Image (cartoon, rainbow, N blue to C red; front, side, top):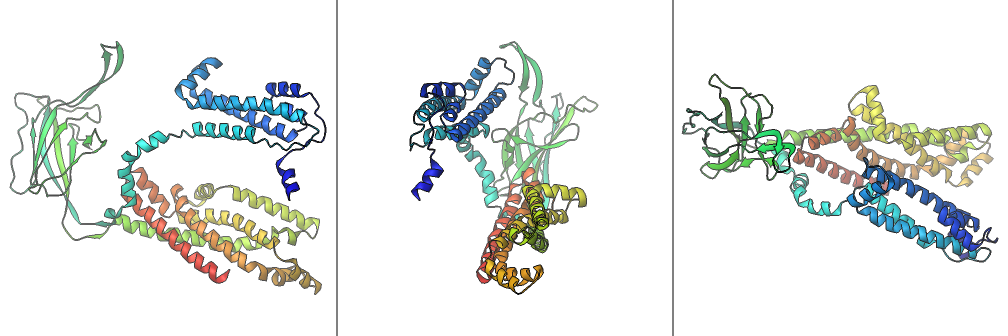
Length: 526
């Protein structure tokens, strides 16, 4: 056993080095790995040379990306070091790797022809470290940003992890309180809203002012042209007769009739205020910048704006929300996409698997050629992800669950065909020989000598593939292959994180239940 480990993990040159040790070190300083190869450690030399060549190419690429507008090697490298300090760490380990390559070449050449129990652990460890550091830089890994920004993302994660407020809904009606504003201020500004007994209303003070202005001008301090923002008038707003404990959204209607919600610049969220038990609130707002450049005025030359407080009031008992119902329906569709794909995949992969089993197809050159051809086709199909197959299927049959079923079926045929064929190749040849001794033909051999042995692994692989197809059917919906994945990505793109959380919970619960069911089936039949 020890001799076998030595053959695998260490190189014992049996012939003397082709060059002296000092020359091997010098040659490895010029071309990394060359000294090791001339010292009869050819595999080691090739690995070191390939590693150095790959790392140099990667570093040139990353330096060029870090300083795209600079010319000259020194300027590019210095700028890359300045902008991304991780390059300094990479350079240090690359230098250590280069020095150790020279030392290793000297030692390998000197020990050539003698038993060498040293293993090239250090040089290969340095190579792996440099590859890891380059991967860190390529991946733009920012642990500090991850930690510091986690608090900012926690409200969104909270909505995804506990989305059940959106699982129920109430019949609602929208109530709006308004206040009229004018720009610019004149001798007769818009009057304040009249108090109402039952309906909500807003009182704004002042009722005229200036929106936030944004223009390009020359900064007198820097003497450079830059975008300058002049904040608009601060308006004190009071709301009356709104429903208590129900959020009120603040909206603007500009002079061109366009509506947009007021944004809280500190939190970068839509501004919402909460009335007290009397339905009253007050808030200070900065008159925002108009959405477009068009400012329409009346005959007096005044741009008429309107401030609105919108509140959604509940007027009935709770009911299942449309989002929950939609997620449930699409989750059922997702399950059946995976189930149908597994069914078709099993039916079509079983005959293919017998053609891809070497022990059944090596009788003559013709059948062996069929074996290699089928194996090649299975490898090609399996190497293409179901997402790609889904896109191709959508081109043929259009959006919908049928495209998802086609995509998963094609991939299942290739995956199950490979697994089934390997199960066939690992069967006991004894029963086959016994059936052959009776003079049975090829089909009889398969039926009585092969099939009884492959049923347990076939069942196991089928259940495993069913589990994969259920999970994959949630993903192919993203590209339009039907199921819950399609609406999930739509909710995420529209920042509807609670609705997305409902879909995520349905997926997690479904996968957990199916995992339990598949384990029970496996225990009973495998």
